[in-house]
Each structure stands twice: as structure tokens, then as C-alpha cells.
Length: 123
Image (cartoon, rainbow, N blue to C red; front, top):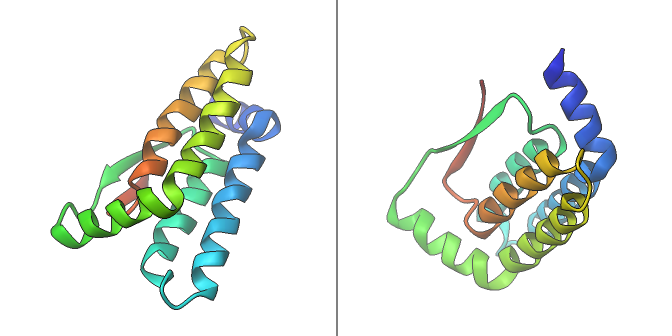
């Protein structure tokens, strides 16, 4: 019940913005042939961005391919997704009720920099 309440509050207080940004990134990547290797990671993180409470991010594939894809991702797209999470975190951090949500955005900002090779699991 607490998870549901936190997820609803999260969605209203900015989760819809971050999830939609990840969805847009995934769709843009899916349209291009070059972006297809990053598309599954973008959609996975989009779902996590919409409803993060009760889920945890895990390492799935720490191999060389993931490292290469993450470096390219960081240069081409990761920084702007991380930036939007930081901006949302700063806005939420000025309120007392928003501090836990701001912390979640900070964690998502870190995930935005290297999303390939990560998985999302229910707790």
C-alpha cells in the first residue's frame, strides 16, 4: 500500500516527465537503425522512471559490449537525461515532502549516464 502511494505521488510530482523523456529517447532510438542497441535499455528505464518504488536496478551484463555502448550513450544522450533528472531533483529538494523523490531522481541521473547492461527487478 505504501509503495502504491509513493508511486502515485512520484508520478504526479515529476515521474511522468522523466518516464516520458525516457520513452521519447527510446522511440527516437528505435526509429534509427544505429540506435537499436540502446532501445531496450531506454524502454526498461522508462518503466522504472514511471513507477520506481518497490523496484531495484541490478547489473545484468557488465561486459565489454555494455561498456562500449554506455560510453557512446553518455556522449550522445545520457547527459541530457541525467540533466533533466538533476533539474527535477533540485526542484523537489526545496520542499520537505519532495526530498525522498529528489533522492530518487539523483539515483536515476546516475543510471541515465550508463543504462546499458542494467536490469530492473521487483523487490
